[in-house]
Image (cartoon, rainbow, N blue to C red; front, side):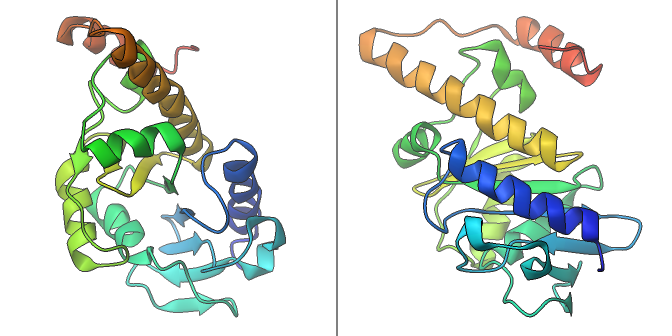
Length: 213
């Protein structure tokens, strides 16, 4: 089976999106790019995550042409592929509708450095302006907002994270949900203290050296 490992990982991490409460139903999507082959394994559109088998995962090239699979690729394939074209370091993309991150996205607030775990994304998590899902405008908004960050909020929509592998992209989404919840709860009580740029640069350097949390 073509890209068997990547297909297995997409199916496995798709289920983890549900069990980790990072999305509901068939919402959200994820993909893995095999740079050597120039191919992408992406979640099929509209399928229950717990029903997706590896063979249901769709294989496309970086221009979106279907190479293998009987299902239709995710409706968000345009921004997934755009991210792979945007940065060569990106090998996996995770898009979620997690509650606390999406709450901030609906407020159109960026996530500041309220906790050092924001460093998984950068010195903050920016917000991409709203556009209809699956549209070219949404892709352009995400690319403009994410820049060199590893995550961005999508206004009135959700969160997208990227990484050198699917485990990294998933972990960033999971950890940022915790930070978004902390930020929300702190704002309910008062005005949270924000870490300085210098503090965050130290954290980011440690993360880049793969120091354990």
